[in-house]
Length: 240
Length: 222
Image (cartoon, rainbow over all chains, first blue to last red; front, side, top):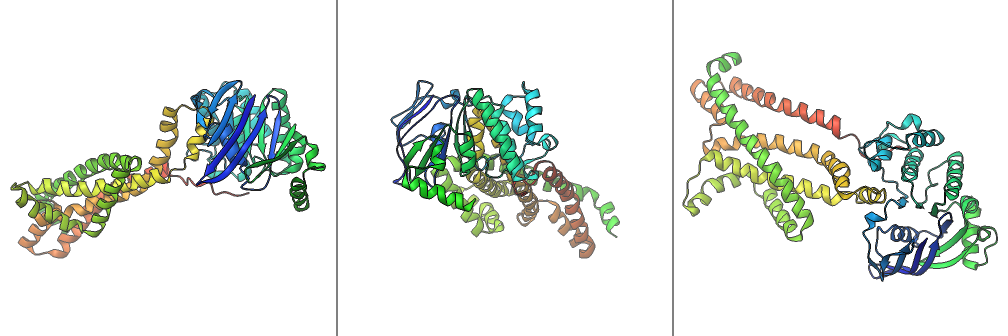
């Protein structure tokens, strides 16, 4: 389980996160929704131990990783048990799609069969020897997802991963997320895609201006109890 | 006539060309090695960064020829020493090369997208492998075109050595011209020699660009 206790973060004396308490069990999907600048990505980075918070604790599988805003564990021991798919992907530009996926595994990849299956599912098989600048935004997104999946993480943090995907590819991701849930992988997902969040999430948290405004089940999308969440959800639905 | 010049003065020309290549080769080696180290530390340390900025500003302001003359005349007079002009030329060009290479390296390191490293970390890649397989190749590809252009400029600057009596190819051309007074043919021959030396460098640059510096941007849309 990942436990975030009283997490706060500041940037240039401005509060980015305020006293956030969240947890994620293995096999659970938690979606983070809310307006831009609400602190969702910052929270994911703290969760992934890429950034230390200004205050609070991060406990992963019972082990203190951040204590009072200080990293108390070598994060290399935690990665890639926890991995993060960035919104902007950051595929290494000098490596092909295949090399991007294989590099974390050394010279060869043990899960060659799974790589083939997933590359077929993600419609990437014929693009594996292309460089990132030769791939479309959607293809790059799928490469980044594939790279993360083959790391066999226990927890995956996903930042807007459906942003550049078409409906069919988003559906494929739904299936993958469901499969990961069955494999007891814990997932925190930042998304503006409410239907997607509703389909896959066990819980949904609404973050705004660094505050955890509301947290609840997937009914939050259809029947939000919090007034602010209702306004936000209705606006998103109107746009869709 | 051109061929006659090459035929009659081939010994002097080869010697002059050799001197030009020695100056360039030394300035390249010292400049690139020193520049990489200087640029690296300038990116890490504020004081190194200030030294690099001031040096770079001075070199932008002072023409290379003035620096060469200053190191050849007043500097040696102040220190009471006499240094072979060839060494003075190499030192001058090496200083220029160190500072300009250092600037290129520092700027590339400053601009390096740290997110590539963050992604590698959450993929569980060890720091050494991140440096060797991700940081170094990306930085190498980014600095390569600028470094090659700079080295060709350094070679061209080597002819300033002729003005402090270094027997490099330009001075040899001037000496031949003073004997036979055929400026058109002689300076055409000189131009051809520079092209002949620069050509392999340009081919190498082109090859390396093609091999290593593909478009690293991620600009392709659906």
